[in-house]
Each structure stands twice: as structure tokens, then as C-alpha cells.
Length: 275
Image (cartoon, rainbow, N blue to C red):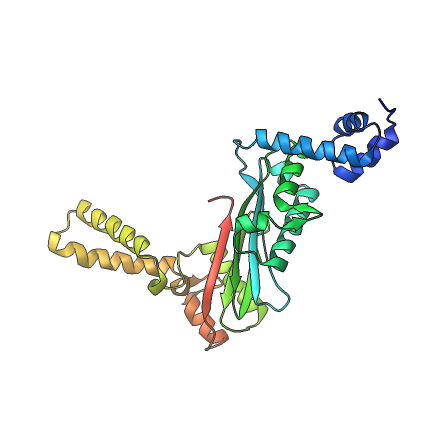
């Protein structure tokens, strides 16, 4: 077994981010070979990560970003087990690295993103290795994208909530980000009532009808009152009908028309660790 110095251990720790004892053991097993020691640490990380697969990763970082031309945007969430790790600079840096790969390659879905290369390995392998090194379960929990004439991101200051909005044309970035903030804060179910999923509408109508009946209203009034409740739901839960968060006297739709009469919201995405 090769003699391992403190300097050797420190060097490997800097290269891998693993703990001092893990680095010492890896160097001893590898007889001082740094490349082999790195492989040992990586394999150990994957093994530890697989053992943690059934643990909950409910903390993490949610980030969104758009391309330089503003036409593509993505949201990524890297989850972990504790807020302490989520606030670690290395964890945030890893999330940003994944974010940049996602924006550059614009993969179709999360599975495709996990298969993309990062630092000579797949993103899935990098996440597993980092999980093993830190001692917590890491999980690339969410990825989605928007492609439009113009995109705007919003990231909450706690990095646990982010949104992304696609517009039909370019508008002032500050105005676009206001709409992204609206999506983050108010969590609309659709752009407008016409784009509200049929199953959501049916669910809300069912709830409304049951409420009306519990209130003892005549059966011949149930449908009319329920439709009124549905209208209130659309106002509160569809983006364009919501009160604008920076001026509750106007709707989001009215605010957008004041910004640019021709611009349309074509898509939005939102993700939070708190859902």
C-alpha cells in the first residue's frame, strides 16, 4: 500500500470534492494513482446514491433562464434532502451547470437531459456522484422548456420557485418579467378560459354544484349558480383574467394591451418545491 501524504489527500479532495477520509482511503486503494482514486470515489458515490434512492429529496434549487436571443427558455430543479445543502455554493453551481447544458442543447424531456454530457460524463452520473460525495440524495426533479417569439424568466429570491413565460413578440424585458412574476406568484392554471383543460373545468363545476346543493338552493338554480362560480374561478385562476399583481385595478390582459396591443402570451411554465 502506497504512503499517502496530507498533501496528496488535499489535492484529491480539491479534484473531487469528497471528504478527507474518503480521499485518503481511495488513494490507499489506488496505490497513489490519482486517476484510479477518482474512479474509486465516483463508483462509491454512485453506490451510495443508489442506496439513497428511496429517500425524500424535498429541498433544492429551482432556476430558469432564457437564451441570448430571448427565443428559448428553460426551468430546471435539482433537489436534495436539506436546506443546508441546497444553499451550498457547489450545489447551486451544479444546478447552473445543468441549466446551461439544458439551454444549449434544449432537450425534448427530462430523460434526454439526464443523458447529456457534463464534464465528460452524463448529467445523470454527475448527479449520482455528487450525491454520494455529499451524503444526501440528489434528484434532477424537473425540466421544462418554452420556445416563442420572446421569453422571460423569473426566479424567486429563495431559489425554490421559478417561472417562464413565452410571448408572441419581443416586448420590454421588464414588462415581460412582470408577467413571469405574476405566473410565479398567482399560479394560474391556464392562459385564459379557452385554454383551461376540460378536466379542470369539469372538476370545478362538480365542486360548485355540490357546494350549491349543500347551501340548500333549489335544483333548478344549481346550474346557473354553478356557472357563476365557474366564472369566478376563471377570473382568479386564468392568467389573463387575474388582477395584475402590480396594479389590482386592471387585469393582466388589460395591462398587456397597454404595454403592446399586439403581444400575446403563448405559453408559460412554473415549478416550485413547495407544491
